[in-house]
Image (cartoon, rainbow, N blue to C red; front, side, top):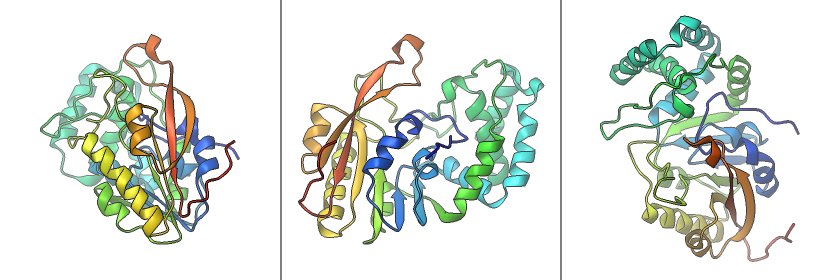
Length: 279
């Protein structure tokens, strides 16, 4: 099965890991993702239905607009990828417009522009909820027309909602499958991406997610797959799951020489005590 790329750049995006994730995801009628991010897992799986959530309202707004109005969105967004819009002066002007904008459609167009023109494709907000990533100085930012149309077509099977992960998981019914890609436990104090939105994701939330995943599998008969860094803490939290170790190449780091391989875990919570055979 070929792979489709997301139309957004995204720290922690799962494009390089989708084959492994797909291999470990159980079958079901509906895939639920409470941390959808750029949507790489959604784009590269084949469930009948999808419930895709994120706490980032700009992300969900963008997805819903691309789903409903792909032709208009692509036409209008393309205008901001002209050569004369790829300057620091224009970038900071449009970033300021975005932070003041209350029109959902315009905000979505600006969000795509910022994502493709900002430094490292990061999505970061300050404590006031303002997007504050600096200009990226790329020679020719890529306009993802093909990826946008593919997303819009696949999105016909999906519902996009801006909800806290607990609200999203409370809707999981038997027949559903859950994939969780939470902000990762930091490997160091300088490698923390948990502030990708104004609402952080601390260690208490990490433990709470593991607890809910276990309850869903054992009490509600809904299997759950979680990805995270491979650390002593995550192995402890996911103690009643089947653990798979994977090595992933990090693609976003301020220092290109630190874009090295890191160890990750896939924790699979099954609906019964019979564990699958190891690969």
